[in-house]
Image 1 (tube, one colour):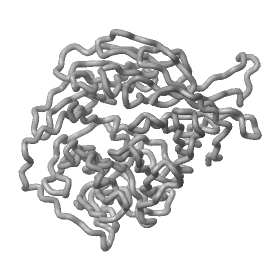
Image 2 (cartoon, rainbow, N blue to C red):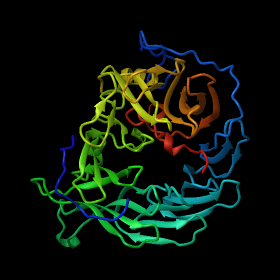
Image 3 (cartoon, helix red, strand yellow):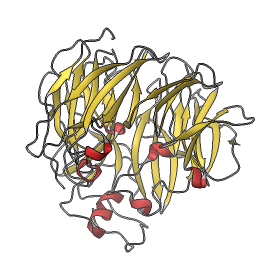
Image 4 (cartoon, helix red, strand yellow):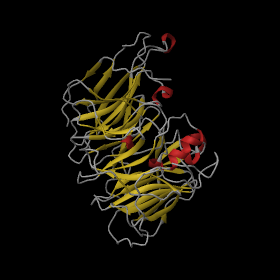
Length: 455
């Protein structure tokens, strides 16, 4: 169902915070060839990788949590029950939070030291995912009745009662946690389908001073009230990004929604893009915090109508992609000079083998922030490459690679040379039903690994 764009009546409270063909059928890929005329860079796998300090990986293999130092550290297994996912590093690198499937108890949030030892149960959660403060080993997770915040050792636990929608987000200074909530203002016996009201709140890290940031009123003829989903903060903490949810409809949101930016000083929110898919790894801030790279385009498929764009938060975004390409996963280098991204030929289809062929031609590219100087870094037709991430010094790129129906992690230099595998398997696949193809071509890589690059 297509979403009707809804901006609603927004009241922002002032607050004082800052190819060719695939040689395989529907079951999965074997190999493909590149699109005609596409530039390629031959991988230099024989080039040795220096023993640089590239931080640590946490990843899921066979449902267990593993860690290793990059690039050549010894892998260490931290769990042994095969029921884990969603690894997340604490800012110090001393702790890992992860989700555990607990049968009839649903998902739970657990903590373990990265050096190993006995894991600690934090509590039952709606997704099991933990959200770490950017400045301390304090984390939040969503439970049925609200949000819980506590330190890794379990101290200073605070519970915020609310009907939370989506993922919360910490402000850059770690002083505030923003979350979207939905309220039903009438008694159950008198409740109608449209009796829902969405808002975005923030609360201090100690659980005090909860306040409204964004409030949605009724603006649609049928009486539905709008909801919201938090996308994140600007690097300077002056704006909160969020997606609109005018119909409280998961099916509608699957085709994308408007991305908004609400200044925390009370000024009117601004629409940054009319429709985009609701993936946080489709957003990447410039190091200066003045520009935002994003994936523009509606419709739930990831193989068409997806273009990279740059927003300076003052007007419509500037498109960087060619209409013949589908570009995803932007990642801004920390020196601000390059954007790495995933690119493949775009195909106008609702799915099937044509969509799978196009998705299998995804490669890692880089370009300058104005869209010039586009260069393809990976080119092996046996693989599907996506979700590039820069090392802190900008010398290396970590990326996800599909090999047949297996997820792997690879590392290369920023010019595409020295490609090497660093994790041989991430499993099980994040969506077993969709398999290697993913949900409309999108794979949840973030459920399978996390990269800590130091303090």
